[in-house]
Image 1 (tube, one colour):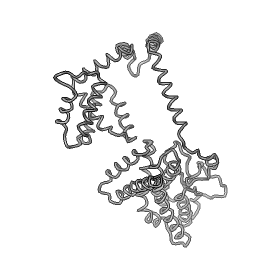
Image 2 (cartoon, one colour):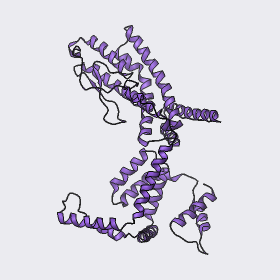
Image 3 (cartoon, helix red, strand yellow):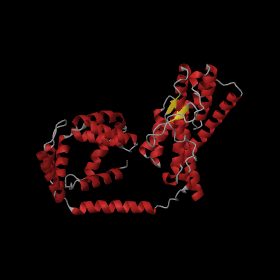
Image 4 (tube, one colour):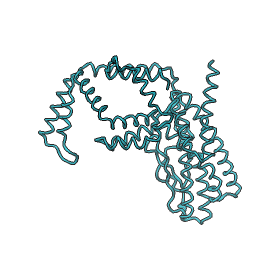
Length: 398
């Protein structure tokens, strides 16, 4: 950060806190002090865990704070650790806390609010695990109604106008609408159809009544189908409980236990395939931006190679040279690849990342895989594919 940037931030902070420059100490002096105390190392990354613990210890609601931190960390919020580090330093400085408390009180008085009334409400709240009487509930209700009526009406109207304006701006964005038939055809997908939790074909016999070799042959056929996003006869896909939930499966419990254990090891690969395909089909829409488009295209290329592997396994199965142990052996390199792709998909979905947020997430993912060369190369491939696609798009537009 340059000296001019630091000076600008210092001036903005002084204006927000209503701190006036004097003849002896002004913005230039604060800037010089910050520049002298600046270290060449990024200490916030090292001290983020310790800073988080300090804030939680000094907070009245440590569980809520830690939960909020984990939520923001999952969304890949930029400069989160730097902010937590700053807050921990403020929590240790009694003079800074006293000044900020006085500033909050003055601002509340200017807005027609009093902090004592809020403390009064909090003081009247019952402790957790106790019940409130009707009289106590009525008193708290009267205080809240009084405070609500004393608030300036312009505040609520400003929020309403802002919400309406943002909604109008979103409507004016020139994003092509997807055709209606795309949503009216549920089979137009590479993912599993919405499954049922029981077999619907009465002609399907239980696997436990068949010889062991026949059981293995039947379950391999189902595995090859599930690897392509198709339900089998004895392996059924359950309906999703959430939008981005992992796909779960139901296996015929009469299957031989040794074969059943192998199937349970392979099914996470089918679940990751479902997650990746859903991500590709969703993020290919216009509103998710060029970066997500490029990431979806790179994943689609990897899924194409994965489908070639499934086709080779199916050829081995048709010629009678495939066993369940061989399936598990041949899928070993692919399991790690799809696991990383599914992890990236879940992180982007959970953080609702677009643009630079996706690139930052991939960078963090790459750094976390130090020591695993192949996994790092996969993340670098995804990142380079996005940069190449974005640069190609820019050249075309120019």
